[in-house]
Length: 377
Figure 1 (cartoon, rainbow, N blue to C red):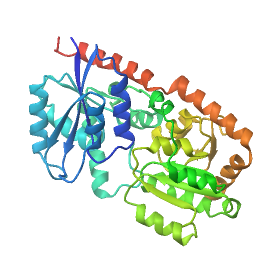
Figure 2 (cartoon, helix red, strand yellow; figure 1 turned 180 degrees about the vertical axis):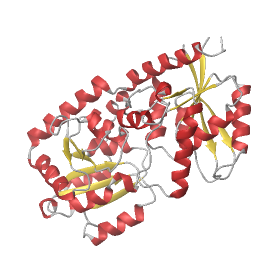
Figure 3 (cartoon, helix red, strand yellow; figure 1 turned 180 degrees about the horizontal axis):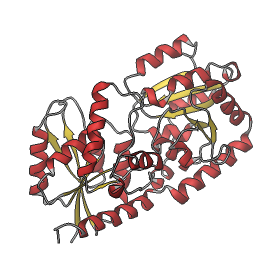
């Protein structure tokens, strides 16, 4: 009998968690696992790109419509779907899906697991309450599966939760990376003008530290022939654009917005920079390393899971320190041999430890283990 699993993600965009789901399901053995992908559709203006991408890969999808930030109709409708399709395991991602999923599975044979993708660095009061409730709900989950050692260790500190935890590290789809052939015209034009291209891909939010990267770019040592592409969207876009203008960077920074061809941008970068204040194991950094790009990143937990030592697979800088970040970028800019060496090391790290195929095998084992302990036969 195949194990029927519903992956419940977010309808808002294709960010780290959504791309993680797509990478996982692509490599699950279809003879063992029957996969559904769903979202809680809480806003009629959203496009739910996760479902579109999942359909494109040939997976069944479901949209649970319940408008509003926390509509209890979502619980009722999700519960009905789980019973109708006889779903064995509900796999949730992020606090809203976790809480709704936990409520929906009460009293059902359906098992529930969560993959925490990280916590907010500076949450407001409402988000703080939601995330606290999320952690409390974990005591009612059949398994909680952090994707980084940092998240795992943090949850281990909660009394009695350790027995529900299983660490399965984050991973990336190497096949998707290797299939990228083209570089966007925007980058081609900049390179024709002789610029060294610095790149970032991800959300425009505080914990990603893009304000630090802009300050680094404004340092005198980087002012001549460096150009920054910021690929992604988020609530801080306008603020960051204003900051770039204030620093005199308007002619050397391009805000590309959300782009489906993000990996084509990555292919065109000379260096990838991730100046985050907080991370799990960042997918964008894994993609850059998997493509063999030299990287500079902040020396924080999560990132150090990928680059444990400065100079082995990438360069690290102290978080918040834009001056040392500028120095690290300059080192790579001025040393083509180092660029090649770091890129080769980075690709080897990802291939050996962080492939999506490896992650999928680990989840197949976990799903089977959970099913064996349930009443489903």
